[in-house]
Image: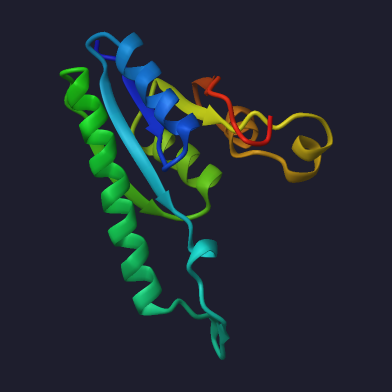
Length: 150
């Protein structure tokens, strides 16, 4: 039986490290790369009937998501591996878990932003929420590249 791996992917170095980890460690796995287009990032002001999403902002976010997934495909080609790419609209952690449940994902691989101490406690993290709610195995990959805030 083929293992199915889900990689949560955005433009971050941590997500790139997670994808590279999955590509180098998941022999003969079916790899899905998911980019979550979070409406909180492009939502406009509230309308009369609730939340209003500006059409032009949403279109720009779809274009950006397409570029992000093209980057993932380029990385996968370096490993001579075909991947399935998909964009979903939703809250990031909820969408990752739902996608994993709906597609019988065996393992989720995602990057960690490496927050520590009080900032992790106050901000929470997508990785932590996914680990707590995922239907299966979760691998959290830290990018060990130096950053400006280390």
